[in-house]
Amino acid sequence: MIRYALAILLVAGPAQVLAQDSTPGLELWGKIHEVFSHPRCANCHVGTDRVPMWSGPEYGAAPRPHGMNISGKGADDGANYLVCTTCHSKQNSATPHGPPGATSKGVAEWKLAPVEMQWFGKSSAEICKQFKAKESNGNREIAALAHHVTTEPLVLWAWTVESERKPPYSAKELGKIVEDWGMAGAPCPTK
Amino acid sequence: MRVIWVDGEPHKVDVEGDMPLLWVLRDEVGATGPKYGCGIAMCGACTVYVDDRPVRSCSLRIGDVAEGAKVTTIRGLGTPQALHAVQAAWIEHQVAQCGYCQPGQIMAAAALLHDKVAGKPPLSDADLDDHINHAMSANLCRCGTYMRIRAAIKSAAAKLQGQRP
Ligand code: FES
Ligand code: FES
Image (cartoon, rainbow over all chains, first blue to last red; front, top):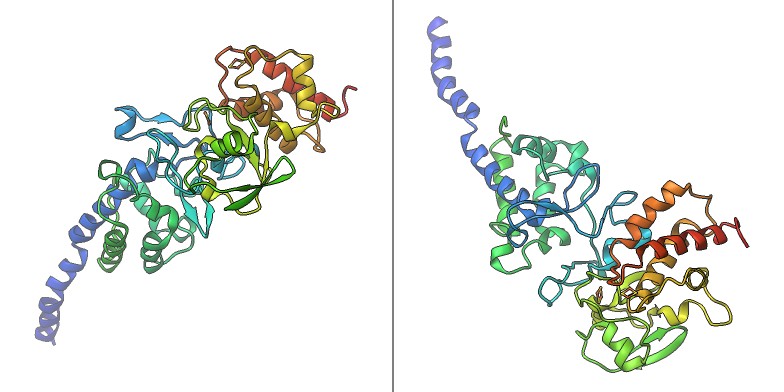
């Protein structure tokens, strides 16, 4: 009997070690975080003040709030008298420094991510926890999250610029990374 | 070829889809109220309404304006006989200096008052100031008429709320 139990321990031991080893999963999360913390994504994933950010290579080293005292307070697409689509139309402006634009279902769409999806100013661990939790991720399982990042027009929009302003990878690659991260147990870093 | 309604009248426009609405209004339709300031949605001088929502017409391609859309410029906001409350307040406070930015300022102010004041419970002075700060910060005036703009908006708001004749 004891010999039998020992045999089980010997077989179970390495497998347990493998299951606890989340390094590949954490590496995958690191790639997801590279995208989420990229200015092109994080600038509109802001907190309770609902002020979008201007940060990224074209704005110099220090991130700063969106000019013109813009705030999404009251509604994620801006106050009715000055909605985001007052300036952000269906397409990226072709004029240097003109406003970017995006379309969903045939109409101009521009809005802040919900406040529970704040990424700007959050740590990798915080974003990961929030991305996994259904109450802060739009009630999505991992498969639905992968689908979301590969199909949502506002997410796809992030890659529609010249290479120096693009987030890393592609939407399709990001979807695959999210899937693989899920299969690796969807681990989150501790900080 | 598309038809847009500008200040209540239909206009057939036959231009490239990437022509900004501002060009269409000024050069094709002859509605010269909206002005060209920056061309990149940074100054507000070109503000008009498309289907009752303010837009920066310099940065909106005509190809992205729906067939039959209703466009309102400063010319369609009120008439000399029946001025919009904001236009009347602008005259009362003699807001304009050079005047170049003012069509955009008036369109922005009228959108704010329509949204937050007309037919709504009265706002406190602080709340109105807060809305003015948000609504008007994207409209620049190189002559610096901001104090008069604020006073005129408050005046129009009071009138719309029935607090003054
Ligand atoms: S000209 Fe359109 S916002 Fe300046
Ligand atoms: S009145 Fe001259 S720019 Fe405003």
